[in-house]
Amino acid sequence: MKAVVQRVLNSSVEVEGNIVGKSKEGYMILFGAESDDTTSDADVLAAKIANLRVFCDENDKMNKSILDINGECLVISQFTLCADLKKGNRPSFINAMSPTEADNLYNYFCEKLKENGVKKVDKGVFGADMKVSLINDGPVTIIYDTKIWRKNGN
Image 1 (cartoon, rainbow, N blue to C red):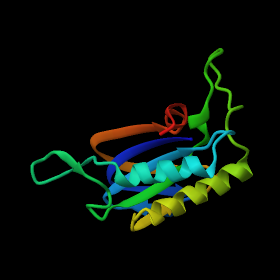
Image 2: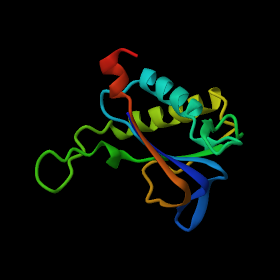
Image 3: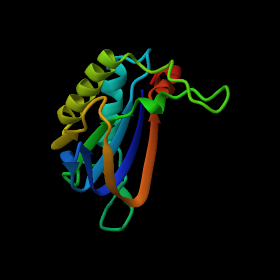
Image 4: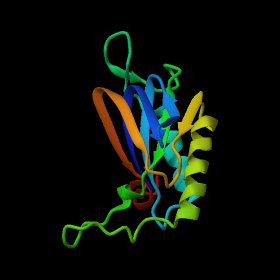
């Protein structure tokens, strides 16, 4: 499971001219599920992101989490994070989870963010052509891949 987490001042997602999700200060998260990902991966990822300390404290040090600032999340499904580029120049998406399973895991992940204390979690529309807007703050961008925890057993 992969996630690109961007610290934002605000973000929004539009489908067919309508804003379907938005956030104020917090994270805009691109989420990609691979065929071997499980709910356990989503559990770990949601907890790690909820507790990620990339917001500045009173000393201008990145010491606060999204929970500490009462921030919001916008989560966008993004199967292209699962691209395999080993051969040629055209990406293969053979590693991406099937759409039905991926949609279920995407929704599960969003619920887990809430269970981990994130006050507001908005979403895009799974499988839709989306237009995403954001103001990346910093910029701060963190990339997660849950395979690192599987290999290390953490």
